[in-house]
Each structure stands twice: as C-alpha cells, then as structure tokens.
Length: 134
Image (cartoon, rainbow, N blue to C red; front, side):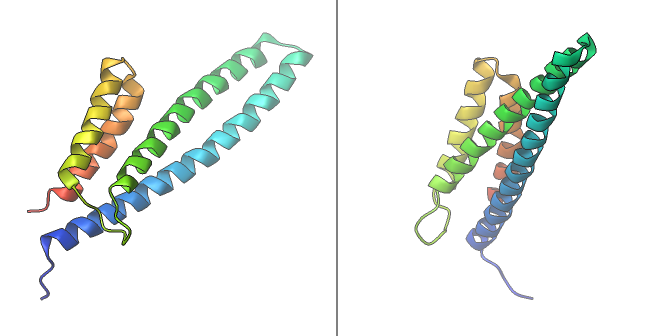
C-alpha cells in the first residue's frame, strides 16, 4: 500500500475539480448556443402570427439569461482558481483561495444575486472538500 502525501492528494482533488468545472462550462456553452438558436427561431415565428410564439420566445430568452449568468460566474470562478496555480501547475495558498471564493459568494448574496451565489456555493463546497484532506 502506497502512502500519498496530504498535499499531493489535495493537488489531485483540485485537478479533478478543475476538470469538472471546465466540463460544466463547456456543457453550458453548448446549451446556450442551443437556446440562442431556439430563441431566434421562436422570434422569427412571432413575425408570422401568434402570441404563443412570443411567450415561448420570452421563456427561452429568460432561460438563456439565467444560463448566461451561471456560465459567467463559473468562468470567473475558474479564472480565480487558476490564478492560484504556479507555473508548474501546482495550486498554492489553498486557504486564501477558499476565502476569496467565499467572499465572492457572499458578495453575490448581499447583492441579492441568489442564483449566482448558489452557483458559487456549490463549487465552494466542492473546493472546500477538495482541500480539507484529513
């Protein structure tokens, strides 16, 4: 049985977290593109007739708006986490990273941007678990 150092385990956990975050952003990006196409299609239909198409377009636009802000928050989060990597790809100052992410989450909550705060909270919890190796 091999013994893995605590710091090495933290680094592995953070790499997995980054990969999951990047994958989530990638998926959101594709969903946003799909919603953009649906929105344009629905808007083109509103020129032809019904109020129903306009309501559908508004719902699609609202969903697009929510996903856009979620992706924007996740990109910001990814940028911050990557700022804590050195030139060798090693994550530094784990405690400072957690504090900074927590501050961002609380700032969103204070501004009543609850959706964005909840998005950050999910990843904050995962980040905290990744660095809290016993």
